[in-house]
Length: 126
View 1 (cartoon, rainbow, N blue to C red):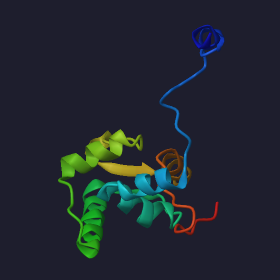
View 2 (view 1 turned 180 degrees about the vertical axis):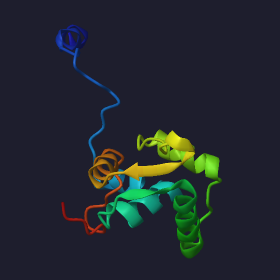
View 3 (view 1 turned 120 degrees about the vertical axis):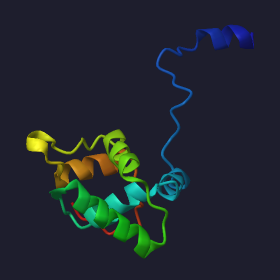
View 4 (view 1 turned 180 degrees about the horizontal axis):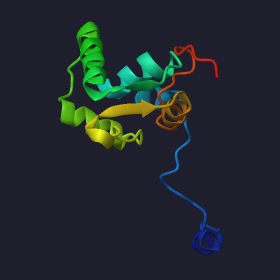
């Protein structure tokens, strides 16, 4: 009887991996952020600042942030790959220059999509 009842339940749209976004899950996302994500969040997203600089300057700023926060920094190639993996693009290499140009709205979209915000701790107004 129970078996026949279970066969009648429509499970077409059921996704067993779709867990609700709870406070504990948000805490876990924020706790697992790497140094690149923390740097971008604190120095660009929360400050509503876009990036428009040459890659060496960007890397120096990242290294300064890591030293200041006592975090382990990534090598240049790893940082570039991590930014690319986050969907923020690659530096503009036209005319043999490596220049990043990442807008503030793009930062905000990526930050929300990757759950970089913690509701009570991050002071951010849209």
